[in-house]
Length: 295
Image (cartoon, rainbow, N blue to C red; front, side, top):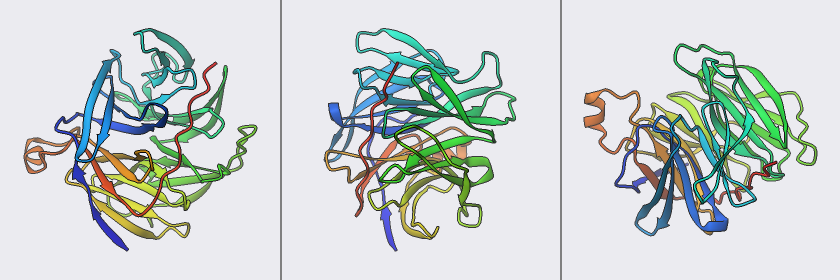
């Protein structure tokens, strides 16, 4: 097992940084500060990440993904927002019914350009939460019995979808037909027996098909092999590690988002880097980020 230690990569900190994505077409990093409703852009440098832009949407934003038409697919409180570089915003597919005690949360694009989005309890909401697939104008429910839908990723060939339900400490797996978007029955891939310490949050896969999972409350990212064993660990100087992604031209830099949310004054003082982004070079390579096929 290899033990890594991530280094702080941004001077800026965020209340709830999430959803790092490498936009290879434009050689930039994208992420969100969920509760601030902000989409951030940054440049990956040798010594860290330089923030190059911020755009606030006036509502919680769960994720951001590059779209094939050059816009950004921003996951708003209840629907997808298609944001143009000219400041325009076009409403897209509805994910959460108006007034529901949930908000849209983590999202990912499948290898064919469909968008998958999960939901998160909001305010006094207690679920159940959903995972949906957006394919053009069609919104299809994949799960409707989750407690908190979080990280999403696919196996290297696209034939398996992995999804996190944070509050049950479960990583689900199911077969996935990239050509049609059809899915098979889900099965528990990792459970609380393997996911000990902290809560599983954001997730990505590498070219070997192994899963890298950020653990909220543990200050750590763990790499799991197909048998469910931890084969690598990344220590992070922030207890609330929220998500993880591979970035850079060679997709060998691991970018980790963290949060200040949920930490009291003493915990924030003890971990002043909480809310920053971190990076680490690892002996693995990530998978290219597909772009969302809007419309």
